[in-house]
Length: 358
Ligand code: GLY
Image (cartoon, rainbow, N blue to C red):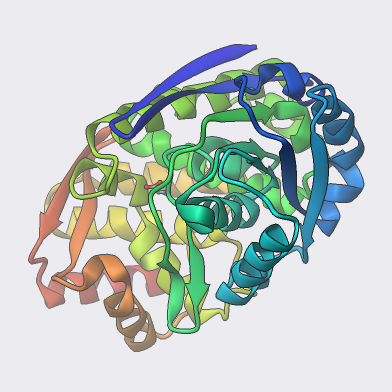
């Protein structure tokens, strides 16, 4: 098992990464004086992992309750959050009680939000079971619910007390979701550490979901994210790098009604667009753009998508990060990023055209 320290200004905690560590969760979770532990999960994850989690958490000798929501983005809503808060109040959950999330990014975002507002904040542990959640969503304290007007438009910053990333839980992840998670790993590789790209070039290890390989990848990403979150917990400067490809990606997800594209698929196309824009601005070479396409294609991720350019631009203008003008995370080379404002419409249109032509 690897331990990665996250030193966020509001709280320091550890991300524990290992194969089969869920069964020791009862001992791995920091000691607390909770009387109740609620576990938030969805129906699909429950079928695979609740028995293991239940046995592990029972070792703490506390009252244990299961809170279940439907799988999928539809559960990341104010309605679900309000239902969960009411259920917690009906159970007389108190401020020292513990909320454990067991699931993918929807569950960690929703559970984090609920934990942060119930009685102004109760202890929170994330047990992420998807690759996206293990390398990104569960780390760094962003919580969210969606609004009809857009994804993640309401949320809080609320750090967990610990993250337990059991890589064996990825064995039950549907292949399309696993591959989608690789896009976030590639994002870290393209922007912050090209060594990760070398690591995941081992397509056999990727395909086999090899335990040692996953431990190295997940802990490597946690380390990179921890470094960024320690500098900019509240996302006012360098944390923007974690959204590489996300402006286009979120717009594409919304364009597809959140059903057509998984998050990782949409941001893969978004990262190719960001590389094209970097090239248009004379920052990056054609080779950097080609490398983006090669890496995504090697892992079966999309590098283009049918889209209406006008609709995409309208959608990204709605993005909460763009209210005071668009800032783009762009690359000058692999592992070298910068934040660029005031990009001309002509260059954006040219990059969009290159996407359509690809
Ligand atoms: N997922 C992007 C961030 O945590 O900032």
